[in-house]
Image (cartoon, rainbow, N blue to C red):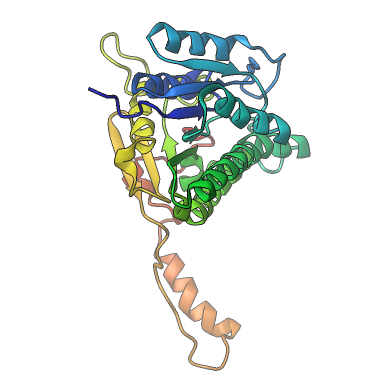
Length: 318
């Protein structure tokens, strides 16, 4: 019996630890050949010397389980290193079929305290990193599609965050980058659909080194799988990467602890029309002020109650 991803090649970025590692192992278990990418810096803020060890260890783990895998230790936020990553997948395994973007760092601070470098570095790794790999993967798929004069197999799974959905007071750089990734994903989904490629985005909640302080008060169970284990997220990534998800495109899904929620695109909550040629200040005051006065103080546009989030946290699950 063939495996769902047998004969396919996947790239997983940030796959040396945490969520990326769990996702790479799952794709390997489902039959994909995996390029395990990780820059290998020890600090979750992107500090420390880069190391090949994390990526190489995960690749070795996949091979030990009977799969195929190679390591790539480049920085996906660097345009040329992202090109080399895609080229490695094609050189080693003949083609690229699946791209899972997961690499990221954190440099948390309130917006009034954040430095330019703290802003730029997080946006660079998360948002630019997602763009770089997506760009070169899409070039590969478009060329293949033109060569066969028809659609090819392509799957992109991007990583956003509930910090984008509900806000995160201490993470303006991270929340903005994660919101940008959602926009990048929906745009990519529209642009590449005619080539046979889908692009979807997940908001995972898991206990990793990126979220160790967020979940510090949530103890791990003495027996059984931790509800916050990355292994709860990996199966959804495997599904979205598979042929079964051919009709899933441009979607945002929240996933954690045995739960998957499909998030709708924003809908119009209320609509007001001027009774004149153009709105006046007084007319807007009469319409909008009572509307917002009836809403809970501080409520954002996101359906935070459905996702079980807290509005008063300065940090947010990844």
